[in-house]
Length: 214
Image (cartoon, rainbow, N blue to C red):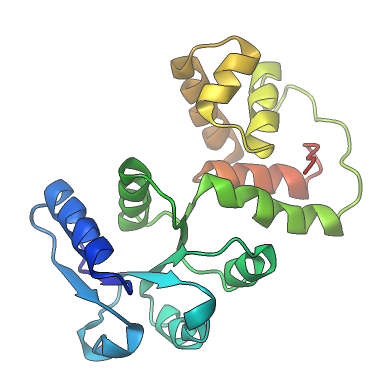
């Protein structure tokens, strides 16, 4: 497990997150700080993970984070804002991962696991904001390509992923079990040669394979 550095202004949240990580990864080393300025930069090494809380009050910290990003530090931004323009600006900085303030323990651990394994992470609720930028700049999507790429059912699943549906919602809409949906998602990622759901939708959008409405 890489060293983990957590920057969050509230002690109770820092303690809760530290305990959560240590419970899941007993051998992990978690270092907590109130602000980025209190984090000694000499402690940071390549491939370490930095989780940092960002809101309107410390948006200037992004400048320092961009420098750390160039040093191959894996930075996970913990966004606390409902301002869509601010969220879009933070997403445009292209950090390794993005969390939302209201996130459950399982989602947090999933994000950490992906980043530890070299995969980027985007909280599902941020997908629509990210993808809307592509939609506004693109023409109307063409018709879905033939089944030579994905099966008809897999296109149905991908279309629903693109509109922000969870596996549970997809299962309900297509009258499938969640297990079947998970299998379809795995097949989609494999066939499109992408690491995660968001990348699959981005690839489909760039190729005008899906129709998105927000």
